[in-house]
Image (cartoon, rainbow, N blue to C red; front, side, top):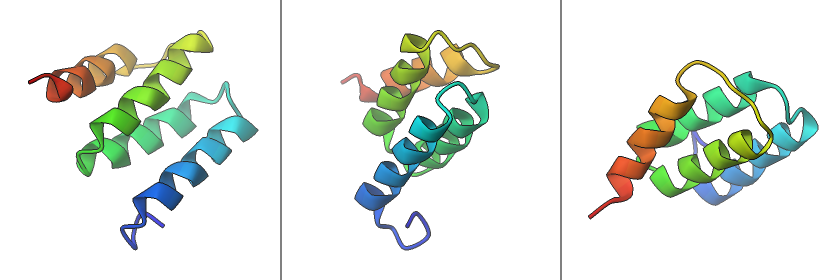
Length: 74
């Protein structure tokens, strides 16, 4: 869906993948990387907050979180 620019469907599929394996940081990292490249900062922030709620830690978690937050500020 991401290659077709169907972002709503793509985000739904990312969330399904995360729900299948909620403690797998690779799922968050790959989803956020694609979303950040497409300037989907709100969606990236939502996924990163899910990771924090699930008490996950992985490289670049807080860096990605701060980048997404920064881009959403006016």
